Image 1: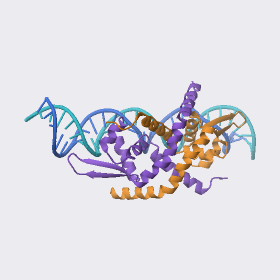
Image 2: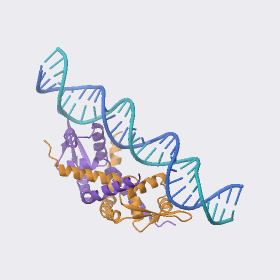
Image 3: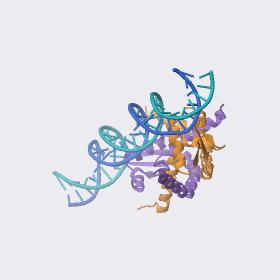
Image 4: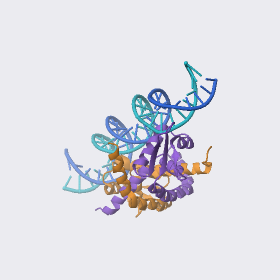
Length: 122
Length: 122
DNA sequence: AAAACATGGTATCCTTTGGATACTGGGGCT
DNA sequence: AGCCCCAGTATCCAAAGGATACCATGTTTT
């Protein structure tokens, strides 16, 4: 017997969908960096520091595809490309903030649980 | 010049860390299913439906490792293994709920942005 | 004049991860 | 005897992540 309603299930699908959009290695970082205003490609790259060009490109493409970020090309010399959060992107920062607070509050517990678990597996 | 403070950066690390824990294909679904009480392995498997044994095992191991779920083995015949949310795991549901609400509210916008983007790429 | 640097990217390659399928092993059911 | 249930491993292949090298254009440096 299935106790899970169809609505619950599709809701979970949506959540999983959004989480796998947002839950990769760089997306949240980029969204946070863009929250103060538009930024150029290499500006983001320098701020993040240890991201490869390819990953920054694909992260930004993904955000653009989902309507969270706009990409504006200025055909100057040298070329200039600005990335900026859309309203939807700025909106996303609210629930992410909630998760960020939880993460900061509990990352210690998680890390010690991990250490304990890994030690027991020896 | 770096405008990103060290505190901001480590906070983002923590958020990314938690998100990549939670942001995979199955974790949120499992946490939601466990929120009504303990469940057995195959009980979860049947409810989720299209998950492989391996993925369910590794999802649950990950949650256990991070202290979000407990695993209890009853050496009965047939064996019985219960999975249950810890306090930390139940705690996590609060910020995830926030993201879930956002996801349900905005999944439509995201999907149409995707469709639009993919159409333009032709 | 040649070298080096800046811009915002592709292309290529390899490693890591995701996931389907098959198998284990003890017991019970028919 | 042959099948199913339980909670998993083991194996293998496809997909994704990610480092490195390269591109075209133009300016600055040596």
